[in-house]
Image 1: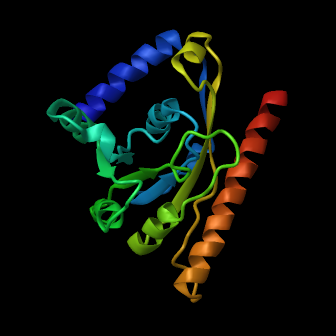
Image 2: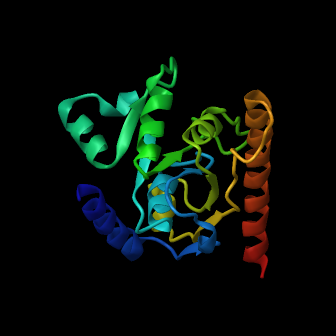
Amino acid sequence: MFYKFAKTVVHIILIIIGGRFQVQNKEKIPVAPYVVVSPHTSWIEIIYLGFAVSPTSVHYMAKQELFKGKFLNWLMTHLNAFPVNRDNPGPSAIKAPIRLLKQGKVVGIFPSGTRKQTNLHLKRGAVTIAFKGKVPMLPAFYDGPKNFKEILKRKPITIRFGDPIHLNDSDKEQKEILEEKSLELMATFDQLQQEIQATKKK
């Protein structure tokens, strides 16, 4: 309930102060459960990705430092986030999202792990979670402001979805599947970025 309320309030604020928001290929969003995956370039994309898959709620994997203190822990938990130790990930890094997927929910993961805009290094965690959860990955790419100052400049915002990537439709070994699908995911991110740029030129 709090997640939906907060999302509605923030959405109204960003509509007023932000630029035009466009979702491309929304028809490619599968029925839950699934793992939505996007390169992490800014905290802003987390918010807009939630808008893009609406009315579905997204449960985000977040670094455990964001849960320190009673208030932050309460806030992050009620915003559908769950903590992960990025420096020393334990079994919970896999078990928590898989449990959510088995409950029919959507998990959001940013596989770069940091907000680097170039040379993104795909961590295999997102692919592993989708594989073990027996759900597809939904690739997404965000193009827009990277900070609040750029939001105020009303830069256009686009999120484009790619075709869902299925991981449990092969009789190959797990290691081979994870490697193959990781490369496919990275290639899809590059393709989505190019497609967004192409739509800007029209």
